[in-house]
Image (cartoon, rainbow, N blue to C red; front, side, top):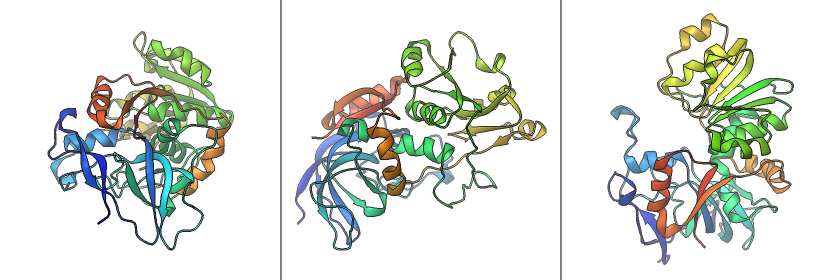
Length: 338
């Protein structure tokens, strides 16, 4: 027997109230795994997509979920045990990771728990300059921004487009980030600025001060004016909201520019993009311990900041999901497990 731990489970699809905090079996590890005592868990949209039963996907695309399921991917914690073939990690070290994504998309990542098993290839040493809460807020959102803007880091073809995603050189470019106050958006803003771009941040007015602190050169309050009505000549739009409305940003781009919708389902501007010489490209974020190791110094020295919207005890995951449903999240929501 591996013993018991506390975890957040759900036995059917539904709203936040289906999440239950109860006993679960402590995970076992294989030769290449690391057992992590979780201190904090970062929330991400796939967590509630899973909880709701992937309602945004057509039935044919919905993965099968085995109940009870434990959601979550992003963790920060301390190494509890290592498999016999693990090298580079030792008991007692602080680590962070995005666990089994997208392979665990259907509830196999199991991060809303006191312990989680992580493949050593997905694990990285926690940035020394930040606490567990901020480290847990980084992995999925920051890896998404990194793989869109800096380095894809894998050769897996995105089934939603015929070509491989390629980041563009950002130095001296003008980049508009839509949804700049959200998880992916606030990291995309900072990475673009770090690489020498002029950044236009689009968000609601309450976020202006923090986004300017993060490096935004210009700010547009979308509740007062729509950026697509007057912004022109942009080199790149990172639409961290995405979806069917993403095509409206095509008119803001110069000929030869690029549109990166983070959520590309429903995009209907392919013909307009082609007619104007605009590249529309997306990618699927994938777990990468190597990239998290590369990113860690940028988090440690404050080059990249993790903005925390709110925190909740792991036992109150349902409340955290209700906060997510309210929208207008500034940065990340994090669960505290220890």
